[in-house]
Image 1 (cartoon, chains in turn yellow, brown):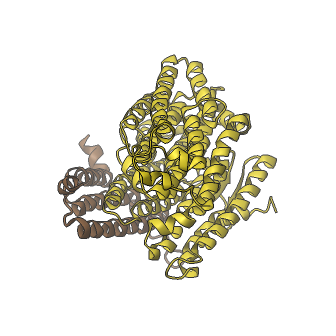
Image 2 (cartoon, rainbow over the protein chains, first blue to last red; image 1 turned 135 degrees about the vertical axis):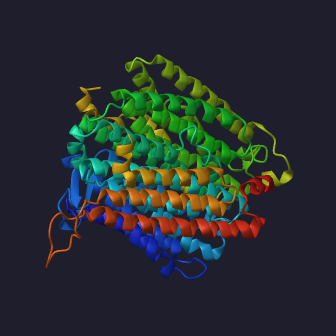
Image 3 (cartoon, rainbow over the protein chains, first blue to last red; image 1 turned 45 degrees about the vertical axis):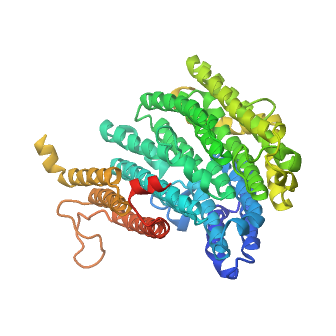
Length: 496
Length: 117
């Protein structure tokens, strides 16, 4: 079963088919759509488990769709980086569980089946993006992902939500075009769309169009990952979307830009056709600026979800800085932070969603003293906050430690300083949040009558918070898992 | 320089079209005009990629009677067909958002919307 080849293509198709059928199996008020979505996500997660076991056993493998051999047909490829589908499936599953009671409260009943359709489509796009080995296929999955994300931001039907979605859509569409242009140029240079094949053929091609192609790809991916100064769409979109959607958007959708950059590096380093040191320098600086600016804006927010959205910008900064430094330690740290930040940010956004659902308040002053009436949720959020600051023994510590080590390894101690400074700023605003929960008096008597969230909300938040701790203690596990992939990536550079 | 441009007129034209579209997206105030700018950009990229497959004096790559080399590369056209589908769905989503913004705010001028916020 584990090495059954078509499993890889079924893995992409299952959530797609599940998404399309959701409105058909549920009635007009959205009954049965939750059960259907849960079933689909469970099946998808089981497949992810089987695929990851196979990559542990045999190393990277591919599947040729429709029997058209590469480089002519579309090839699906599964390697160590693709193991990030585990986090995608986990967050998808927990977001669906969380939506059980959240969706009926936040959305009109006739929109609920479509909400699950869009959520499953989003997961499909993500999985397809991660496993595809074909450049144009990558673009198509990216568009599935982006379009469903725009619609999910707008789904609550509020005025501000629709405007945030429109802003997101315009910036997202421009960035997608930039990426399509880069893909077109690579095709023109090599006559192939298969990534492995492009890497092989790129070696002798002309420099100038290659530079333009990589510039277009990077620009597009920078918008997708909301790197400063192209982040302006993110705070509104992530803060206004329903909380499970915010968790998916912040945890996973912005990471598409990062995973795309990793793919780009695989092509660039593998072919040796282009020197990316200038690009790396730019990414390192922009990453460092993102860390500080994101944290700086977050300090002044009173809306809890707005604060979390700005915190995503600083964390993307950490990851991009790690990629830009291009030393083996920083790359390992950056890749693992892609997973860990997804877990941490989902804990925080789902926790915030539970608080907002129970109290109806979304500002720090409105949530004052909520720690007494909702002890489990606030405890989970506090664990998430400690993790994101990077205090040992939580999940955030190891990645940031490795990125800092990478900065020293690359001979750029200045960036290690930026990292620590950013962590201090982040510490300040999360302390504000924890302080408001536990040490401030509730504003009115109504706040103390609030009850703990229902089990479907509490369980996902607690599971994620536990994982934040477990990933901190067992941090060496993902590190050793990703190490061979990073070593392979850097091998053409002479060991980095 | 002029020769280079003349020989690559199709590429130069799509780049100019792309810049016109980008200019419209950035400077227009009306949300629909903004989006039309985006459609112009899309067309520019599609034209660029289709032009990649063109061969001087090439024939349609259809097997059978009278099929003679050189053939035009059909792959970019197939890709752009998919690209057009994506562009249509983006446009549909954007226009439906514009309709809802119009219903709720009574305006689709970006500066007036910013004041209303």
